[in-house]
Length: 355
Picture 1 (cartoon, helix red, strand yellow):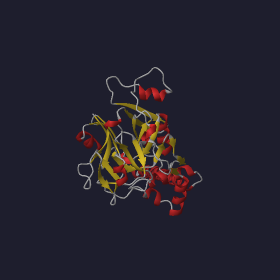
Picture 2 (tube, one colour; picture 1 turned 135 degrees about the horizontal axis):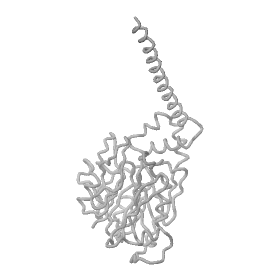
Picture 3 (cartoon, one colour; picture 1 turned 180 degrees about the vertical axis):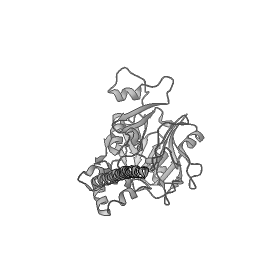
Picture 4 (cartoon, one colour; picture 1 turned 45 degrees about the vertical axis):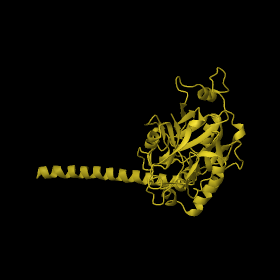
């Protein structure tokens, strides 16, 4: 009997402890839900604008915005965050090729980084890009004649990994290029958006993506041309290699007007540019690596970085999980897909610098 009396208080204490744990867990859940709801619908608009603009420029994760906000709210946010692109035509006469000799006199630290080549490497130089919430890589390609478009060997059926395209095309450097049609969200990278020109021949001409910009290509003089021309006009104009995407970030040294974050939110990003001295710039920025404080880049970040390094013409390329940089067959950046996993995806084409 005494043993039974002693066990009753023990059971009561155990139940009280379990009850406290349950109440604590429920309280934490309630606080978390309340805090998230406050971020979603409270007075702090930055989070709302970040979530909407980031989600709505992805192909398969727009539901992250549409499940919380109505069309009117989403439209209002997008109207406050946009890129107003220049309507100028690229003036290729302003690109004057130099010999790229190193000098002891530089305009600034960015010029020094670009023009001081790595010993024994006259083709390219990789420069690390860091900043608050930013981690990426800028590659200076010294010989623009080496910059070309590589395409999936199975274009129209499926894409290929960037590392595969780099290896198949003897690329020293490779970066993802245009977006692709993804009707069933299967991300197989089969069909590129818009125009694709390779070695002076039109290899694809699908409807454009509607992300701004247009043709991003190099002519036979190895000068980067940004234009909204048709495929026929591009071939007649002597465009040798091109893809179709946007928005255009810089034309003739003048940056596009970016309102808010440009309507693209922050995410992994890629961009291409050319300086007045002819040096081509490949830029790839990581994102979604929240454990290390790396959220990604927006259009403002891309434009600022490219201007710092002297880009005279530049355009945004496809981003998100597509953003990748390969050097000597090695993936340099750390892609993170929409599920938070470290992985890239198959893509239809790439910009490469051949060996």
